[in-house]
Figure 1 (cartoon, rainbow, N blue to C red):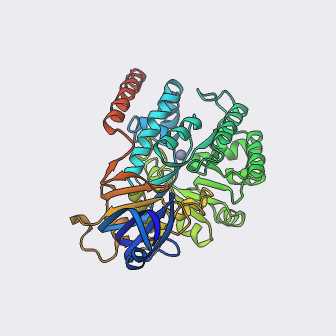
Figure 2: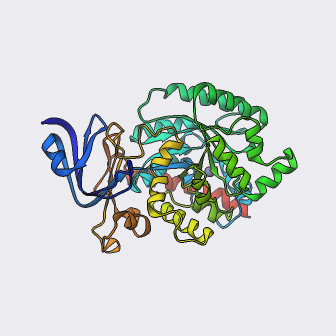
Figure 3: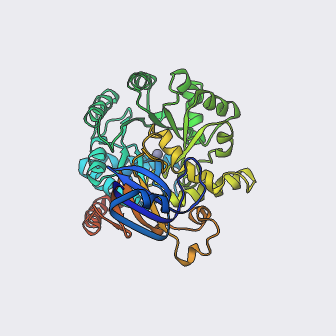
Length: 444
Ligand SMILES: [Zn+2]
């Protein structure tokens, strides 16, 4: 018998790779944080002896979700300003609050709240874009969460940095610190074409090519962004990024709601990745990313929640359903973007966009054991003809019972193993008191 650390025996396993078929009565063997084997329970039990065996007889086991775009620290601003268009929301509420409150402590507590919520929703990896990426990295590492902290660059001063050059140099220092960390992989995160100069974008392009670091940027989020770019640069943002050489397979462009046919072709030719954030786009009435057409052109499309201030939750299970429904509604066809398509977007496609396809995003031997387990033994999931349809169209995140990241169990029986929820909620409430007093002053 081969020795392993953990054996998970499940009623169903959906490995996502090589495909999203449902396997009945399968097991997963984990050793040293990685998946040693996945297969029929009979075979796995005959082959391995485990220190710990976990039976999940009414559950489906999946790869942990990859949230390919969020602003974890913004969780402390969930519900602070709603029902406003993007620019009013940013300029009137979010940026003033950030100017006053963003600090290492703010980012630490906000990121912890986001990670706690994501873990309890089955997410095991997230790509972030926020100030103090050093704090994001430290918080994720402390809590055992896989993360891609974004080395944010923007032309305004903040508590983190004074100017683009300082954002970059501080970001690179964070990259060096976490270079060989098993959970943390930094990515460049220039905020958006409208908040960055050509000079800064070029510098990021050169560094990204040299160091092979992925780049995430908000791109073609709203029609106003396009109009402003036409006025200032006489070209559309994606054209400008292409001229600067940023459209490469290392890029993951977030939103992409405003696209002409030739721009879809350009994105496909350059091999960029796209991150779709349907709930944030719908809530801010920004438009809809033409996902089925992007997929048809061969573009890798991942899924993100965006920040909790514009969504307002970090729930990838809900996001999958929204993505599927929005695509069908927009295309006037029920056949586009199936439950399995959105499950791939929420797992392996996210890992691919983040440059982590060899490490996570599917249940394949050799990858990290980043695993989510959901209980389908409840009224809302009955009867079970197809567990994948149940997960995408009917289940809720409260059905997530267990989550492992790199083989470490971070959610057990629906309870976080490394976060003291009551203590966290008290800290969050202290922030609410501070931020609410400022926004009341602003309204008077
Ligand atoms: Zn965003």
